[in-house]
Image 1: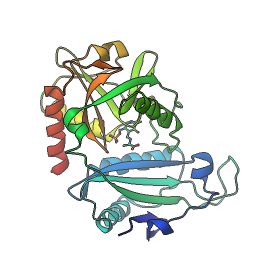
Image 2: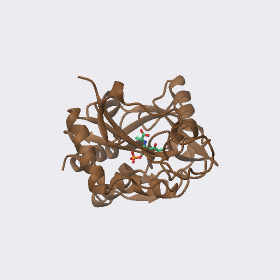
Image 3: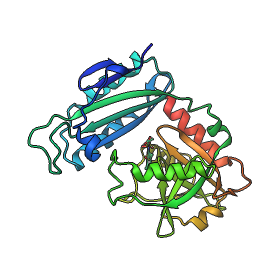
Image 4: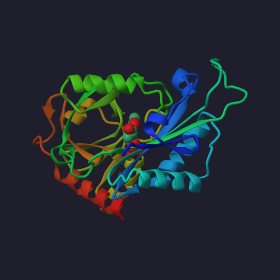
Length: 281
Ligand code: PDD
């Protein structure tokens, strides 16, 4: 059965879902997106994702075409039509189709796209054994708090990671890790404290990160919201990343150096379990 795509108000087979070459998303990356995990056929932490999506649209002044309830109903319907049990739901809004001109068009209807991807999250080899990351310079723009579809720096960073035999890039600015190419970066200090960079325009406010902060507080695991250096990450007892598409993934090597004993650590395992419990609830 063909994958069904939601495009501009209609559910269409993938082959029929077409966007104009004059779409400003295509010509200018003039759009924002959102990504939500799917577990047991349901979207995970969806309200928080829609809240960030609304904010992203507002920050670049694209009028939000749907209410929170309408978005939720459309998401649910798309997941149902594609019978996705576990995977990822992608949402994108661009400023729409108009003659090429940098300034906002006088009249344009936002282009709205949603699709699903089937993916093993909970029982993936990465979740079991952990992944390798490499550090790369953070070459992005200064409004990383907006979930912009302009992802060229992340494409290049993640490709460099792949070519180095790693599964994620940790981007570095002024000697400090900002975040992963498509994930939030965490370390656990030798004394057992979780360390994560505080929110600012330098990083995306990760929705999984936000849940993790709440869960670690509830579990009484000490947490420091501060920047950390690459040198500190090398010396960490554990490291992990979070994202809607992977939940919590152990990081077992950084730039070819094993983290701790080179296997997923106890704090990471505890957080994986706590997050899964929350996602299923
Ligand atoms: N990326 N930082 C960046 C730069 C990201 O692109 C993402 C998510 C995150 C994690 O945010 P969240 O927990 O809300 O997924 C952090 C998605 C998964 C993607 O682009 O595919």
